[in-house]
Image 1 (cartoon, rainbow over the protein chains, first blue to last red):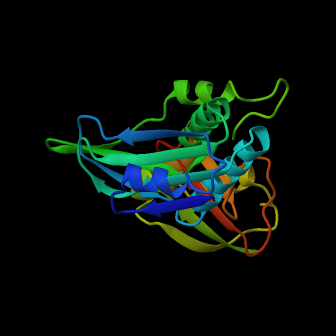
Image 2 (cartoon, rainbow over the protein chains, first blue to last red):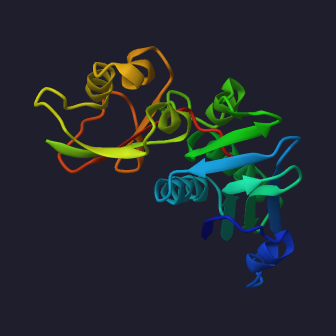
Length: 149
Length: 85
């Protein structure tokens, strides 16, 4: 497993190759999030971010049979079309890889301590959290399971 | 009881600082009580913590509910709902 919180860009192909070795991997599902429309600054809570994403990957590994996972999230100044986040999951079969990739992304959106500030002409504003992100994460909760904080 | 406070994003800007050391009165032993205590300072703190604004908290870098207990030496962070990804 690799979790990296970094300012610099990443290379999807290199990261996918990095979790594809060993001969047991039959499927790699990856997700890349990009900056849309507006330049932004991403702030995070160093230390907690790595820890929280590590926990999310751990939960995914308990639910599905995964061979390897890489999560990269950038912070700092980003401009439209820049890559922000990568989740790549390797497993023997595609079902686990697809599901775990979406699970990790949904939980990351609601639990990893990142905050976006958008820079428009003459103003800079913090992005408001979306209720739809909570809903996306909650659909993975077991019935009667705890709600996210 | 001494703890370390951290603030992030809009909360950090509202308060004009990213953190501080505080010595809490003996009655303040949960995250909810700490929020109330900070709100009672008035000014920017009153605005940030006194109202009904949605604020998340973490104790020692674990996301917690308002009922979570605080102990001496803890790192307690307050921040708005997260918007990464």
